[in-house]
Length: 336
Image 1 (cartoon, rainbow, N blue to C red):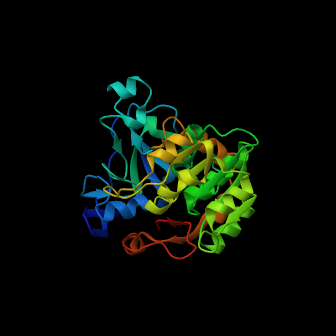
Image 2: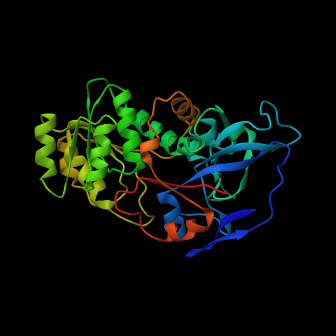
Image 3: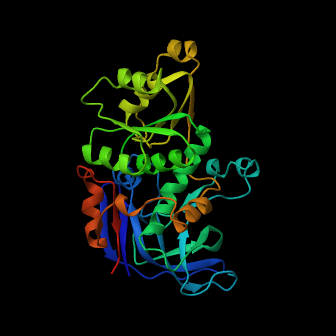
């Protein structure tokens, strides 16, 4: 089979490898689609901890081709999405229900071979069924959507509240839809016009170009004093530093975007204290993957407009090694 292998930092190749065999509790899944994520670029550049050599790909869905001897509840030919984050179930954080903070967390596509390949091994407890009628590409969005669901849970968005989303990538545009489903008035800020237009199509009530206006003054005007919730979804120092300034007094900031390991930002503690800004972070997808699968299966989240293009596995190394194209939201790798 073909797989996209990270051999070392800066060394990524599509090559032939042996098709894996499932263990007793595993599924062998034939990949239908796998998303190329910003985290894959961080892994390539050595900006996120991982365990090379490893096959990348933690956003994927596909068809069950073979099952281990102890597997129950999954049939051959069934479509599934895989939650890549495997918690140990034994450490203090797992016992407390904080599985995303597991001391021994192993992630498919980061610590063990992932879905940028023809096949992937998925433990049965990490697999969630999807309808066979669903577009095969849509299942690859369950993982990023699950992370966004955790972010909106952390944000505690209330109906009628004002939510500002910083960043027009896939995380930002999924968060726009989730905040809209929660009954919020949603604004999105991004420099890219195509993404601003897409945000309006997906339910945003206002969009802002931070390169063309004073974003702080604009948000103050649109939200009568600042946003109730600011969702940082860009994962860059500029927006992480900017986010608290855009929240109202007593407002909440949730950092969802992933910054490269080692980057630092500056805050003014007096401002945070004086305005009692609540800054929170959101990491991974604890117990939210099934909710993401249900939302996508039931058509509650628009997926097709988020697909920028489909690529072959042979194209993936070049895509990962370079920055996203202008207006690009999500590139899917489709084996075959």
